[in-house]
Length: 307
Image (cartoon, rainbow, N blue to C red; front, side, top):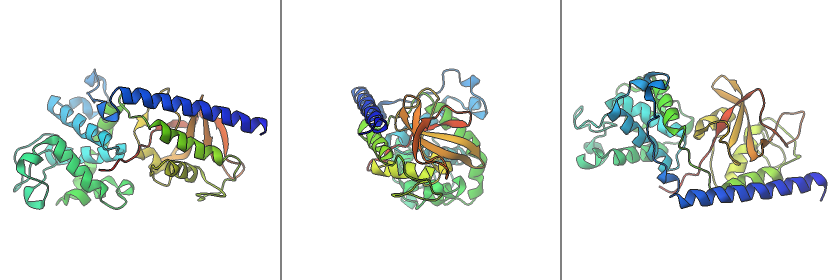
């Protein structure tokens, strides 16, 4: 074994130990579902219209986001649900609506959403919304209006668009201090796969096994851990909860160069300020620092447990 390979092996062992320890700490505190969301302490300090939400609306927002986290869904799902609830009910658990529409999402007993009592249970309503959303083929790549409409069948589908910015603000504000951790064995599997690709060539559009582009490498690494993520970097950025700089962990994704619609490059965090990525056609898959001027931020793709 050469020096470079030996160093990589040692670093991998460190990463595996780190992620295993993180998993143990998470389990002892009750797991991801135990992460109870609350509004930011100084809600007035939050930029944008989120500061205008009242206590009832903030409580319902927390419940919608909490439910998505418990189901292992990406932040994108919570944004879609939030925009839908803002449009349909103003984030209020309404006991009435058009015809027999009820609750946060104005779901109708006559259309198979559940009984009146069930729909007026916000947790039930949110879970039901997510169940139908995730049954929509390719929902993660759809524009928000089309994803929401596929679930709601609204007479005014374009109305959801007006709430997209606020929905994103709300989700970002509430999840900033409460983000689930990728289980240690899955983080280790992601990193182990990435290590095995070191030295392979970059080729645009390639997904392995002989060559990769940046998002092809990250997609295959997460598939190796049983986690499905979108194909391109911009969609991967929208897929998981955002992670504040300094809180990134091995297995998270680092994103670079903001372009129209999202970042244009992505790598896999392996610890100690390092990542594995497929840089460009002039370089091979390699380990490199991720603290660069073009760093956009971090995201944490999560497994989707059976629902």
